[in-house]
Length: 159
Figure: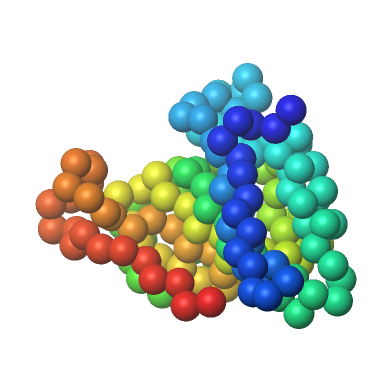
C-alpha cells in the first residue's frame, strides 16, 4: 500500500490525458526508520510506475507530468551543489534522508517533466538536472517561518 497522501490528477484534452499532476506524500520525519526527513517509499514508486504505464506510448502528452512533494529529492541538493540555478539558495537543502530511486524512475519512465518541492521558506530556486526541471521552495502565506525580508509569492508553471 502506498503512502495515503500519494495521488495523481489526470487532466484531459479530448480523449487523451494531456497533463498529469503527481502528488507524492511524505510525512514529516523519519525515513524508513533511519531518521532524517521522510522519503518517498518503494510502494509509492511502484504506484507511479503503474500509473505511468497506463499512459499510451503514442500519447503526445505522455511526458507532460508534473510532480509535487513536501521534502525535495536528494537530486535537488545535488543540482544546486553542482551547477548554476535560477533563484536563490539561502539555506541548506533539507532533502529526503534516503535516495529511494524516485528520480531515476522519473528519468526512466519519462512521464514527468518537472518536480517541485518545498520545506524551505528561505530558498527559492529551480534548474534543469538530467533533463528534468527541479524546483525548490517558494515562500507563500503569512504564517510561514523564515526571514522577514524574503518576499512572498507563487510559482507559475507554464506547461
